[in-house]
Structure formats: C-alpha cells, structure tokens
Image (tube, rainbow, N blue to C red; front, side):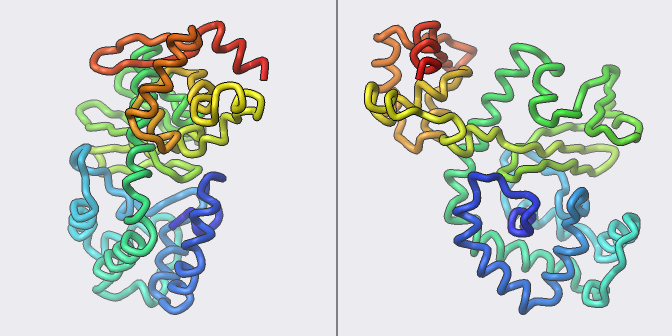
Length: 290
C-alpha cells in the first residue's frame, strides 16, 4: 500500500504499480475508512505497529498474519496512533476498526498481490540466501549494513537500527527476525519485549535484472540469458537465485552454468547444502570489458 502512495516503490515495480494503482485509488476514493486508515497508519517514516506485527514463524501465511491483527483491540490500535500525535478521524473511532482493517488488507491481497506472489516469494527467498552468505562470510558487521546502511550490531545483545538519537534495542532473551520486502524502504516491527523484526529492502539486482546491465556485444557473443547469468555472477549466487532473477527454469540455468564453467568463465563451490557460482578472473575481464 505504501508503494501506491509513491514513497515506497522500487523502480522495478513501476510497471506493476501502473497496472494496479488505478483500482487502488478508485477504492480509496469511494471508501472513507480505507483512505483515513492509510493516511493515519502508513506515514512516510512510520508504520503503525498493529499493521506489521512480527510473525510467529518463518512460514507465516496471510491467514496467520490476519489472526495476529485480529488479536489487537480497536482501542490498542488507536492508542498507537495517538502516541505518535496522529489525530484519530471519526471514521476510525468505531468498534469495527480491526474488522475493517482486515477487510482492506484482504482486498489488497486478492486484487493486487495474489497473482504475482509466487514470483515475489522466489525473489525474496533468493535474497535471504544472499544475506545468509554475507553473514557466513563476514558476520553481523558485514551483513547488517547491507540491509540498512545505518544499522549496526553493538555487542552485548544491543542492536542500533537507525541514526536517530534513541537507545539501541536490547535483544537479550528476545526473538529477532529479518524479512525482505519489495518496497524501497524498510521498517521495524515489534511485539516488545519478546519479538522484533527488521524489514529491509530486497536487493535491487534480485528485483530487476536490468539493474546489472548486459551490453549488446555480450548478448550477441553469449546469448541473452547466458550473458545475463554472467553479468549477475559479480557476486556468488545459487542456481535457484539465478532462476528467480532471470525467470528461467532450473534445467535451463543449469545448462548455461555448465557452458560458462567449461569455458572457464565461472567457478563453483559448495557452501553446506548449496552450490554457489561466481565469475573467474577471465569472466570478470569479459564482463567488465563490455
């Protein structure tokens, strides 16, 4: 919903927004509750906690998320808005605040997200693999700034999530989750003091293959998909990630990787249960020379 407001969209989402934004705006124009809720609860630098409650498990579903929301009382939701100094419009003052919020979120899922969710999920899962590699290779100090530039681990269970003059969050005994989003900006969700979640933007190169350009000369030499694969391997990636990026099947990507490997343009190595591919010096020279 923030993406349709114009302040949360990644450039790669512009076509998708162009398809769905008109219906979303028509809905807001005819539903005073939806318009008031999105204005009050989705601020440029703040999202109401009752809309972003941390999930209980990694396999959360829409139904599970809505059940979490249903456990919030209307008074609790309004208290969160009031704590931020946000005036409560009359249309949000009724006992049906949560029920109508659930109806709005369900509409967004049915009309906007459900059809494209399988591809989005693949991209998000591929991003998680990449972040895990950063964590394994360089620890928290390497992984956290790549998610949010101002986020850093301060030791002793202390996490600083932004540059604001607030004390760091004490995570001792709490559960901390990291969740990628297709939005340009991330946010923090909490169910203090037990659960915290850092929502961070999915890496742009996983959302939009054009973020790593493939010159025409390289495409003519290698073919369009193989050229894209080589361009994307400036950092190690799994075949599954490359499938998500390119939209090709695992068999197709596997064939291209074999050709690139046999030509000495990429290396491969195993990291636990996954196989990572990355460019050799020859592959770097070929990609960079274009």
